Length: 131
Ligand SMILES: [Zn+2]
Image (tube, rainbow, N blue to C red; front, side, top):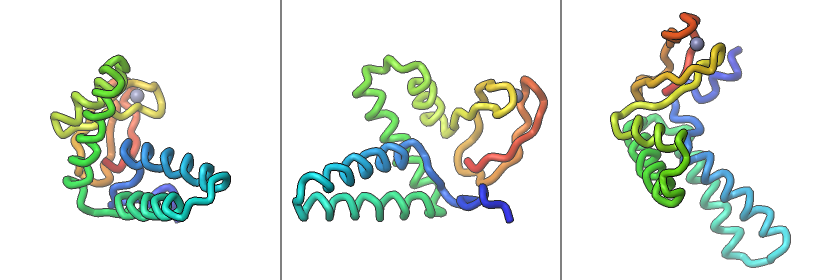
């Protein structure tokens, strides 16, 4: 019934997966123009990795991978992006930064708790999120 809950109890699309998806899409477009077999294979492999990570239940391992990725990404961007910097700081503490869907306030929640009900301390409204 709840289609949004497809990734319920699963890792879902974290920052690392979103990045891998972007790379996969770029590679797919490249594959349309450049007919190199290895490129197609890399793209397929990437998609397998994305699906495996999204449907994984090993939250701690996935969170660690995501944390590593965020640190590397922050390094590449010279730590200039304040949102990223906040995410990296939160990831180091085993937490994730969420945005309240009602008042857009930033909330920090522990990673790996599964689907949890969160009450926003700012607007006091509740929403569910898989972390
Ligand atoms: Zn709120």
